Length: 423
Image (cartoon, rainbow, N blue to C red; front, side):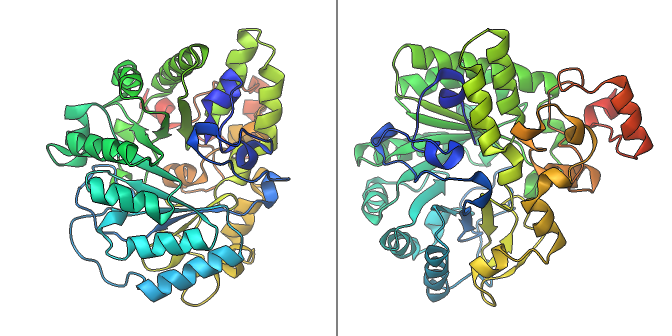
């Protein structure tokens, strides 16, 4: 995650200790902060657990290809409780309950409560349509520290994405019910060509509805979204989207509004912020550089600081890489699976700086980003160490000279970006 308020505006949030190794306010955004990590490469992963594949909606970009039906082989309640015990022993910082739609699972609150008792910070990722007043209270009482409700644009765009008319209004009612129950809640939006032109309206909406946290996700090609290249933002559109996100976040910050804005799944955003601060000759630039280099971007994300367990108990590099499995928690403890570098991909993910290729290898900002999302490289080039095709920082900006380009050609690392091939 790239915390815009922290990196661009000098603010603070609950994740500062985890993302940047620095103290944050104890009451930031209505919640206690994460523990302060001493080294990003040694931190334990936030685990995304897809507790069920069943979902009451059918989103066009769903990374789990979920539907409103029952699936076989999902972890039982007892297996889920044992898994949470494993994760607690491994000392993970947070467990994100996801799906499908996690509220479709009948034992979801038992599982959440167990995570809370084990002092794992439980987070809920939901489409929000099933959060009535009773569920909102149960969510709060179960110990959930944060609810992320997914939207994909304003009303008509969101409903088209979700495959159900009225989904937007139901989600917003869920948001209202959470807020009324005193539950910390925010929005999650995936940036695509369908909604990025509405970004100004979305920020207006965030302020009007008093939403104090919003995460803007870059599209990752997985599940039903695996073939959505045409729906992805172009590099120029990504830059335009970032300019809007930065300007509107700074406006919130300058007016003293408690609204935490983050972008997710593209560490090039951090580089873009640093360059923007330099262009604006702002003194915060060097502190931002230091925070980004401490974090390491992609170096300490997939396979290090983020991991995934699917519906059936299989362990994956992250939630978008469910076609590659390290093992099952039914056979081995999660901690043993996660620290076993005998798997070539796991070893590479834990030492990405040694393996990334092409323009990422020669980038002058390598220490800030370290190649961003490896799964997008795998999906695009069939090589997990190839450049991330969503890097919108230009060759000139990353210091890729003609001489360096020739070096890449000689080493067969001259990967052609999708935008180049389309020209």
